[in-house]
Structure formats: C-alpha cells, structure tokens
Amino acid sequence: MTSTLPDFAAPAIRVRDLRKSYMVPERESGLRASVRSLWNRQTREVVAVGGISFDVAPGEIVGFLGPNGAGKTTTLKMLSGLLYPTGGEATVLGHTPWQRGKAYLRQMTLVMGQRNQLVWDIPVSDSYELNRAIYRIPDAEYHETLAELRDLLDLGPLLTKPARNLSLGERMKCELGGALLHRPRVLFLDEPTLGLDVTAQRRIRAFIAEYAERHNATVLLTSHYMADVEALAARVIVIHHGTLLFDGVLAGLVARFSPHKLLTVDLEHPVAGLERYGEVVSIDDVRVTLRVPKGSAAAATARLLADLPVADLSVTDPPIDEVIDRVFSADEEPEVPASADEALVTTA
Amino acid sequence: MIDLVHLYRAQFKTTIAEQFQYRGALVIWLLGLILEPVIYLSVWSAVARSQGGAVDSFTAADFAAYYLIAMMVDHAGFTWVMWEMEFWIRQGNLSPLLVRPVHPIHRYIANNLTFKLLTFVVVLPVVLVLALVFRPNFTITAASALAFAPALILAMALRFALEWTIATAAFWVTRVNAINQLYFVAFLFLSGFAVPLPLLPGPVQAVAQWLPFYRFLGFPVDVLLGRLPTDQLLIGFGAQVAWLVVALWLLNATWARGVRQYSAVGA
Image (cartoon, rainbow over all chains, first blue to last red; front, side, top):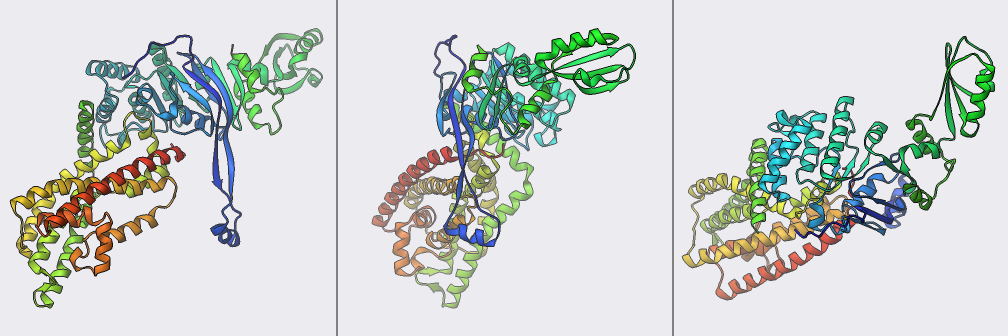
C-alpha cells in the first residue's frame, strides 16, 4: 500500500463544481409514439447534480440533506468512485475517487442499502472472513477490529447466523460491521438507519459517532431522519435540485431558512383576540403558541407582556423538520436564497 | 500474489458454503449440462447406425468418445456470466463489488472454478457410466493427452474472456437476452457441439475455423482424441492464443468503458 504522510491542513474531501447528468429515453405514451420511438429515439438530459462545491475536514461528520432526487446519493456515489461525474472535480484523501485506485478503495467505505457486505446464504462471520481477504487486513488488526465492532454493535450472537436469517436491524448492524472491518478513514453512509425502529436507529447513531471519534474518521451521511443528523452532524449540507442550498451549522440552517420564531405563552386565564399578536399555531387552554416574523419577535413579546396576564413565555426556533420541509416544499425560490459561494462562506 | 491466493481461498470457501445451500439448483444445473451432449450423442449414434455404422469418418464409437470428452470440456469452460452480469447491472448489485479494492472478475473466477470442482465430482462418474453404455472408441495417446492440457486451459481462458466481454453489453443494453441467444446459436453450430466440425458443410467449416467457438470446444476434444495432423494442431494453438489476446483486449476495453457508463441504479 502506498502511504504518504497525512497533510493535516488538507481537507479529507474536496469537491469543486461537481456535476452529473444522465441521458434518459423519453417518449409520449401510446402506440404511435412507441412505434415512432423505434427510429427516432428521444432522450432528455436530467441533471442529478448541477455543480456543487464543498470541503470536509478530516474527522468531521457532515449531514447531507435533501429531498428524494435532490442528488445526495448521486454525490455519494461519485465520491465513492462508483459513478463518473459529467464535470467538475473531487479528491478524497488526495485520490480522485472515480479512478478507483486500490489505495483509495482500501481507505473508504460506502454503505448503501442493506445487501452489500454480506453474502446472503452464509454466516456473517464467513462474509467477514472474505472481507478480510479482500482488504488484506492483517491478522492482529482484524481480530482487534472485530472484537471492537462486536462490542460496540453487540454482534456476538449474530455472527454465526446466515445473513438471510437476520432481521432488518440485525442485518444493518452486520452490514455496518462488515463495512468497517478494514477501518476506513472515510465513510459514505446513505440512509444508514432506513427502516429501523427507534432503538436500533439510536444504537446505529451512537455507534457511528463512537467509530468516527475513535478513528478520527470523516463521515458524510444522508438521512431522512432529522434525528440522525441532529445527533451526529454539527454541520449540514443541503442540496436541492442538484444545487447546494446551504452549508453550515444546523442552527444556522434554521436561522437562514426560517423567517419565523415561535412564542409559547402560558396565560393566567384564557384570553380572546390573540390574533393581534401573531399567527396562532395552537391554543391549549391557557397555553398558546404564536408564530411571528423573526424581525418583530421582540416587539410582539413586549406587547404580549404589557397587555396580557402572562405567567410564562418562551421564544424558540421552529422545529428543524418543519424548516427543512418548508425549504423543500417551496416551489418558488427559498425565501432567503443562498448561492453556493455564499453558503461556503458560512462554513468558515 | 500471496494476497490473491488468500482471496481465492476465502472465495472458494464462501462459494462452497453457498452452493451447498442450493443443492437442488445444483443438481438441476448439472442435469442440463449432462443431458445436452447426451442428446447429441444419442442422435448421432442413431444416425451412424442407420447409415450402416458411420457418418463420414465417425462411427458410433467415435461419436461416443467425441461427446463424452466434449461434455467434460464444456463443463470445464462454461460460464453463466452473461445472465449474471445483466442481473448485477440492472439491480445495481455490481455497485458493492466496484467499490472494493479487487476487480470483480476475481470473485467470478473463484466462484466459477469452485463450482466446477464441486460438480466435477458428479460429472466424472456420469461420464464413466455413459462410457459403459455407449462404448466409446477413445483414441488417446500420451502425446495427445500432453497436448490436451494446454489446449484445455487456453479453451477455458478464451471462453471465459469472450463471454465476459459479451456480458459487458449489459452496460449499454438493458435486455441482453437477444444477444445471448445469438451467441448461443453461433456457439451451438460453430463450436463442434451440436455437429462435430468435419461433418459440417465445407464453407461452414471454413468459417468455423476462423471463429473462436471451435477453439474453445471442438478443438481441445479433437486434440485429445488425436484427430488433428500436426499442422492443424499448431494452427489451432496459434488461433487459441490469438483469440485469447483479442478477447482479453476487448474485455479490458469494454469493461473500462462500461464502468464509466454504469449508472449504479438501485443500491
């Protein structure tokens, strides 16, 4: 294996203007259209990733957010070397991923779906043995890593079972174990908790955090579960329609994309006419939640306190799920548009 | 090199464990593999008998020898990659193999060889029993057996490389069945499998000599049975090597392009 001294100043992942588009066949429905398509095949270019740039420092865990079809998975596939980009460049640990050099592939792992590492019909430990040969893991390191993974993921009773006899959660644990046997320095995790119950999700999450810390691994993770991202990633990258919408800390996402604050007020007795102070989100006896524009939150709070018998009051950001949902469901431009360049600045 | 030995050993173990999980499927595969040449053998034996004992230079006993050897050569060389590759690519199963630091072809070679080692244990007694039934005229000499070894190895390598190359069509074509079908028809009639080469019409024989199919089936059989004069033997080895070089070059080129094309659907 070729090894160079790690350059600590260099990012582990460096992406510049990365693009990927597909040509997809297209035709109208109906017999006539299908006959016509025999000699006149129409194709349409679909842009999956339309030029994104970002850096990830060694040891950093970054959450990759975006609705289905945003280009998250395509980006992960390019960074893991599975797909050739249409344009732009990327280096991971100093390697160009899609050249698929062995030195690179030995240092990274891609977890995508739940049937990657394990051979369906044989015991998990046999699949692990195969990985040991594929990644040329020295004996001592293999046993040490296996013991560590067995401990962290509670794999003990699962190793002797064939993969097909495992439950979804068990299989995911074993998949993760198999994907990390060679102690990769970069992890690309695509929906690692998909389909798992809350307990299993929490467990996987804790494990990823622990692994990353122990081995100073760089992690790029996509998930539909906000809880995954909140628990693991201090930083998030949001892509939508193949372009980078936001790159920064999670709290910054809320600040940038939510133009509202939530005022939760406990009154001494029920009061009518609360609409004057803001949009009423909910009323539960004496507890009222109001949504007010961010800029007028202070003024609204002052008026509430002056006018009404307030027992308690708190000002909070809306839940992150709601903010994300708002960003993605808006057909028009987001309320506070951010160009890729601006977004990169927020990271610093 | 040592690492590769480790890898193959691990892959052997995996495949053996896997195959034993599917004993039923294994038996059915084997049955097909054995039945096909037995059918040709029965038909040609019947034709030979009805024509007074021989078709051209082939007696019923010659046919028996030819097809029993052909059965073993076919068994040694056959691959199922043309179906499997389509499945891998369409379902996205190729993805996990591509991000490992080992070319997927190694996994396939190890799989293929293991499968054959396992099944040879069945094929050999079948050949022996069939030999008792069909009474073949084995015209094998020490020299022909010696020449057979490289002919068989080259045949296996050639067929493997060629079928892998054709299988890579699945990177571009979603349904490769038509291509596979075409290939198998050509293989059947031009390899010496359905019809031994000397029994084909002259022009077809000439074409078959220039194509690779005969080189990985009929040729090793003819070598072992000592049916070829020295010049044909040398031309045959030359053709095997030449086709192998072409096939490997093609395989490299199409694989490299195909992988670029790969859209990693699904997982």
